[in-house]
Image (cartoon, rainbow, N blue to C red):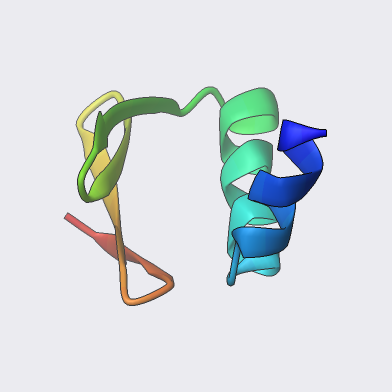
Length: 55
């Protein structure tokens, strides 16, 4: 039941789907949470205002 509550609170469903793709299919890793930070090799992406930007 908690999973459903958390899922309903998300605003950016498409962003979540894209991040899942980056992790599962392209080998990115989450390396930070506030803000969300993803890394693959020397590339860094940061979630800012609901968008992925180069970091």
